Length: 66
Image 1: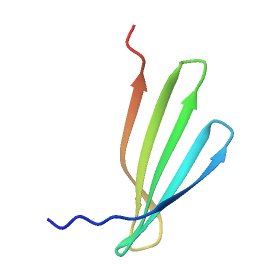
Image 2: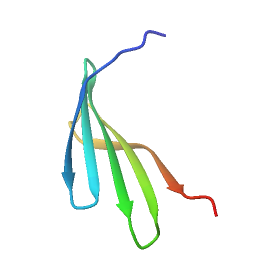
Image 3: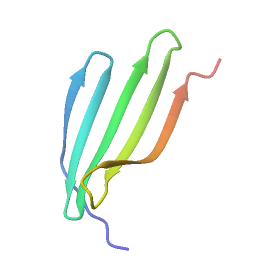
Image 4: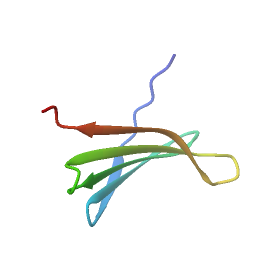
């Protein structure tokens, strides 16, 4: 498997930061969303399909261990 590196650019809106990575086979988005009332981060990863629409690839929720 060949690794591909891409420089991502991010934009912050309120408590979220969305990064866009432009790969040869299409863009990929990583959004990091902070939920202060729960004290957690939700990471959402999305690819862009052939029709040009985003498709959810995965989500990950991070909470501090008590």
